[in-house]
Structures are given as structure tokens and as C-alpha cells.
Length: 477
Image (cartoon, rainbow, N blue to C red; front, side, top):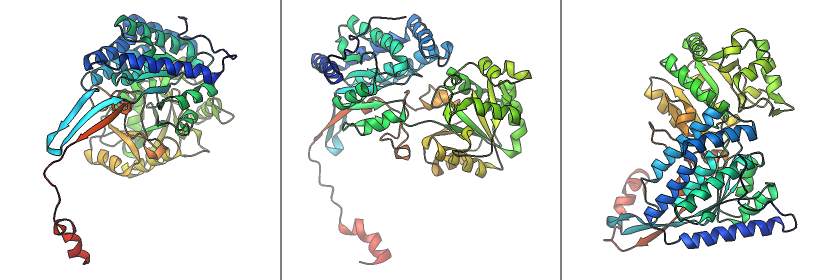
């Protein structure tokens, strides 16, 4: 599905700095042309971007192209992702104001006005070469911003086609096409870093190197962290329901999502029954020898083997030389007891391999989950399948994570769902626990500047006794 490039191929004679400066100037010109857009016009623009990918034939075409170009994931899941995330994000965007007066608080003498942040540099990953660029572009344009995509070099052809589809849809409604652009091929680290320096806001999803570069670019930056999601199966869980949800989430797009379950922690009391339920759902439990082969092939020279990650289950079963029922399995379970650098199964796997830990009880399961996250993924999220509100609340109170999902398929709920209240997104902040400036799901508010009109109100100044009285009583003056 090769399409004409948005900009000419990078011309080495022109130079990276001049090329990026040209993109940014076109983006600023487009913003000036769009500066008087009403809320209805901003909503139309966001809807146009959504339709450019949600359109069934385009969602399918770009999903096929993504798998063809990157070799990551599977077409069916990418179609769902292209449509579901786009639809959910549009739902969220059409329900909020993003220009002019967005909130009035007369009792506080405050009126809030939303304004654009400017030109956004958006770094996007190879795992979501269409859904993430459109998701970020929708949020940016909702606030009247322009956006320039810096895609993964591997995914440039499909992300370029995605950008062309967005630009075409903008032109159809009479909006400036240059509100959405892409840096030219070949995508280099130098070009991406130059874009970060030239933009007004940097938003990075993907490589942690890019996240660190964004924070050192000298511009406001929003980076998100690595996932390595552990999920607890508690003693009171509905085991078949938990297993079905874990399977559906684990196999989605061949585990390329940062929200995919990487470890399952099962309390001892129901361990055998839970493994049986996971097996019925499509899992295959490896033998110790098979588990060793999985580790040896999945990691090469200390790094994930790109020839194995994000591949279909039959490909893995053959590559791992698994026997019997493995040929028909949907995912593969490997038992583990250790956590840390010497135990690669405790890390993120980007594959249909699920690490299984056996916990003595819930307290031990919580300890294991915390240790896994401390190793890789701190701040991101954890899941629990349980009938105990107390256990779910205990995880939220005690663990350094942004999200605790209860009785949900983690991949489908963590980035927003139709049955939970998290904003739809493909970029999950992990807070300062993972060096992020964002401790929530990336959303439209991240792309707005707010002006506060402040007027006087009746004086709100308490007496000294009201503020210090309790302290004086306890400790004296």
C-alpha cells in the first residue's frame, strides 16, 4: 500500500535541521490558518482524523500493511485496534470543550480558557504504526494544535500512508493538511531529536531512549514508560472468567501491547485449578526442559530475539520445539520462581509467552507483583482477578502503579474501555516511578494551555485559631 510521501525524501544536501525547520514552519502556518476554528470545527477535524482510520476498508488495509512492513502482530488484532481505539478516543473528545471558555467557577472568581500548546512532535512505535499516530493527532488537533509524526524507522511506510489518509480527510473538510505531517524517510535519530528541539511539545510512545531524549530536548515533554504487567489470580476469582480474559488479552496482536499480561501470579490454594482453566482457555504449560528452550531462543545475547517476538502461536510452537498439545495452543506458559536480571522471564517479553509464579497467599502474590514491577515496569499497572474488594484496594494503596485493573482483560481495559472510566489512549504514563511526567493516560488535556481569568471574591481569610488552634493544643505555641 505504498503511497506518495507527504514530504520529499530526506535530502542530505539540504540537511536535517533545514528539513525539520521547513516542516515546523508549515505546521505553524497551518495553525495560523486554523486559529479561528470554532469548537464545532475542531470537533469536525478530530472526527475527520478518526474516520481516516476507522473507515473499514482503511482500517483493514493499514493493518495488513503494518504486518507486511514490520512483521509484528497480526492483522485481525490491528484492525480491531485501529477501529476500537479510534472510536473510543473520538467518543471522549466529542464530549469535552477544548477552545474558548471551558469552565466557569463563579464562586471562586475563575474562568478558564483553553488554548493550543503549539506544534507537537509525536514519536510513535513500530507496534502501533497507524493507531498511535491517529490517536495522538486527534488529541492534538482537538486543541487546535499541529502535529508532526516521527515514526519508528521500521514502520515509516505504513505510518506515512496513515498520515496521507489523515491529510486527505482534512482536505475534504477544508482544514489545512499541514496540521498533520511526518518527517521524511529515512527516519534517523538525528532527525527525531531535531524535531524534538524544534517543536513546542514532545510526546513520546515507544523506545525508552527516545523518552530520555525527549526529556533532555529542552522542550516540555511527555514520555511514557515500559510495561511488564503482572496479573494476580486470587483465591476467590472466577477462574474460567479470569482465564478467558487473560487469554484474550495476552494473544491480542501477539502481545505487542505494553499492557499485555507478561506474568500471572496464582495463589497456592487455587493454583492447579487456575492452570487447568488457563489450559482450557488455550494455554500450554511447558515442561522444565521446554521452558529452558523458550528462554534460550527468546533472548539472544541478552536481548529479545526479533525473529521470535510478536509472532503467531504456531510459529512459536515450532521454533521452541514444543510437543503434543502445543501445536494447537494460543499462548505458552513457563513456570518461574526468580525475579531480576538473572531471570529474563520476569521481564517484558513482547510474545505469546506468559510467566507463571506460584504464591503462598495474597500477601505473597502482592510481594511478587511488586518485585516484578520494581525489576521492569514500575509505575505502569497491575491486574487482579478476585472477589475481594479489600485485596484490590490493598494493591492500589500499597503498590507504586498508576493503574490497578480488577477482573478485566488488561490489554483492553488499561488504555481505556467502554466499561471503565479510563480515557482511551495508546500511551500510558507511569508517573515519577518510571521517570515520567504523566501519571495518567495520555489525553486531550495534555495538549492544552489554560488561561485563568481571575476576579475578586469575598475575602476568604480564616482566623489564626482556625488554622493553628489544633496544632497549639497538641504541641503548644
